[in-house]
Amino acid sequence: GKPFRWRNPGAEPAVVIWVVSPPVY
Image (tube, rainbow, N blue to C red; front, side, top):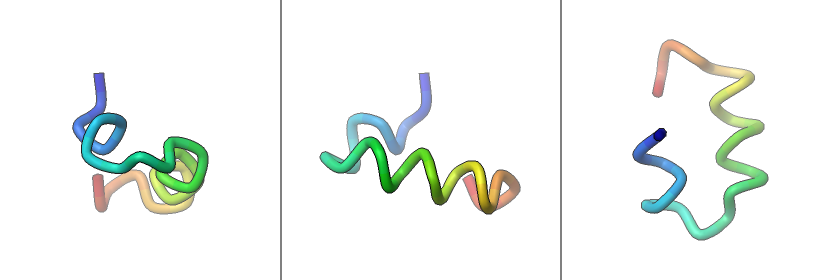
């Protein structure tokens, strides 16, 4: 699992950010 999933309540925006900037996460 990804750490941002439980750290960020907004899963949708988190996924978008992860897709846009995979190396960041």
